[in-house]
Length: 428
Image 1 (tube, rainbow, N blue to C red):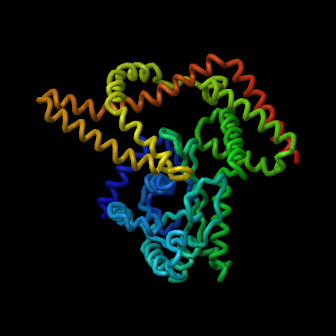
Image 2 (spheres, rainbow, N blue to C red):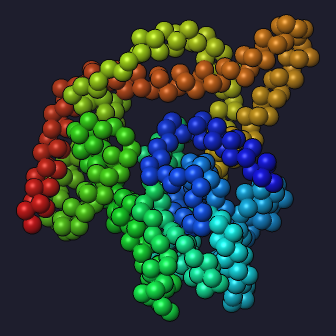
Image 3 (cartoon, rainbow, N blue to C red):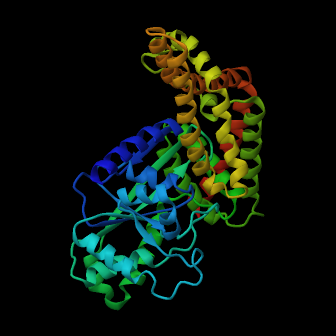
């Protein structure tokens, strides 16, 4: 099973690199970390555990809802990952009280052996702009292990952020929070250990995750954070997250949506982003000057060289490329599982399509033509993917340059409103 796990992790790392344009991981614990519970927010279905377990240099056993273990193939994969099944009330309403007591004992043994555990303390994957209430399960697991004599236990919150979580080739951030020790809390809390750990987890997650009372407010915070991050010269999603939490804290001072300052920020930022959408430009390309990256000429030459291969890939894989779009329809209103549907459909359709093309050329052509055709079948979709990213980037830069005057005026107006509000908050 350890060999199967290693293969699975390697596979999902590659898969994550294909699905996401970029994955930033900050504060990753060192190799050799043992006896730690990791608790993350949960907004993107099965994508969330994949992101966490593939970003750390040590094994983590994820917690999974019990019904997943009834799916034959998935059950094998979950066992290879040493996943722990948990019975949730919404999955099995008739389950007797204490159904998870045996699970807590298993987890306590796991911690006693120095194992690590990944859990999502909200208890559900959801599509809300703020954290759901934190369940007591993670704290009870740690308390059970501590009561059975395991010492040196720790826990750590993780924030998962996405710039467009249900969009192919978006960006993701895996942000690890401070490490908390269980032993000192147990000495102070006594019987209230579960409540103390649960509250600490809630506070840590709230400090890591950008939240809003509504999706429009969450979107406003994210947009203001993006603009301020670009002003500082940092285009990373980590900077966006850090500034977003600062903006969120400032928003609490301007808690009244009828406050003229809040309304000015909302109107100016919304007007600017509507103009971006109409022109097809991107915010980072409107910023004064994006410093040229070394090797840009060589990359441009390389892109031109692989253009024929990319065109072939676009033609060969046009049909399976459309298949994951069905995920949105299958998911309905459950946006938190759209990425999971897309990933699952892509995993099924693309390999089968590639296998069909490969079998066709092997039977239809003779060597060495068949071998050359196989190379094209395997490499052309990667070339097409590279060109997909670059063409969107070039299109956005071209749109920004054509409408630069109007975009910069709208951006300056929005920034002025944001800075006015920030000055008021700092003076309050």
